[in-house]
Image (cartoon, rainbow, N blue to C red; front, side, top):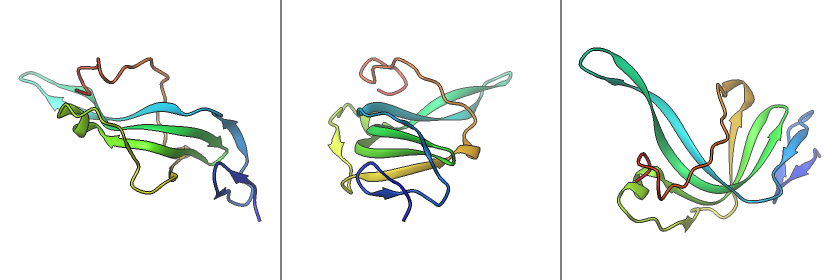
Length: 116
């Protein structure tokens, strides 16, 4: 059996943890879309999800142990209620090779014009 991380997440053979957040962190997932203007296209960031999670980085994946989550579009409707994820202790993983850019930003979702 491989190493365990978080609640009950078994890592793959040869996978090692290089970072463990130790605290619940607010995370905003965004995707970049091209918006058409009259003259040219311009990239714009669109939030897709807001969540509170523990973060784990391994040599193969970025793992989130999600405690609270909501769709970004739900926050635009004015209901800033954060609810438990539908499955307790939901795991969300992103393969390292698919990550193009990560930025640590200071963001208050209640004050962000893109999230409202």
